[in-house]
Length: 185
Ligand code: IMP
Image (cartoon, rainbow, N blue to C red; front, side, top):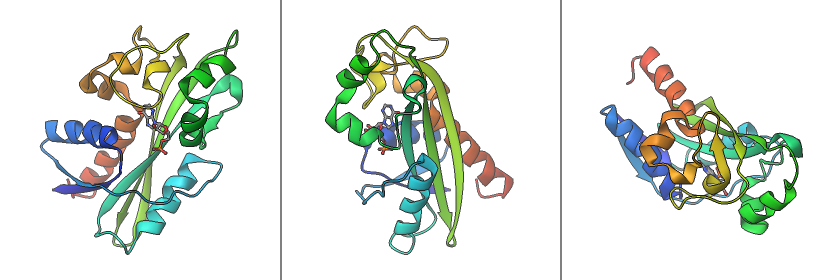
């Protein structure tokens, strides 16, 4: 089957494309930017985006929304991740955390729309914020995020290594299981 993935982010597309390709599933990239609402949860933002695109993009399609949740900052930036990255950036997060606890998680919520119905799948990655930016692969917060059990930041990993445990692929695995159970994949 072919899965239609709506995103303007080529890194997200590439991570998902590689994972699906290794399983013999083709991913069609619907490269478009859409207006995201602001809300208090990643789930709500992902759902609102799917509702907005329903009727505008050929179904079935899926999209995802991701947030970085820092425990010491009570979950900030969470649903404001994109704004925070654009404004204070990774350096800003590092200075907010000077001398503080560094536990954090990434959360991805995939929304899948088929026949007008929307299903959601959540994946998380536990880890911590490093002391400084490391690595040049990946995107966004990758240089400051070190997954649990790893010495490397996500930006020091290949896509294949990142995909082994990532929030995005954990959500995708559940999505694939859902499709397999209903006999579509
Ligand atoms: P978005 O709204 O889902 O595109 O993501 C919110 C912010 O988190 C954006 O600034 C992204 O660059 C960043 N982000 C999303 N996914 C990842 C990831 O896998 N690694 C690092 N940063 C990410």
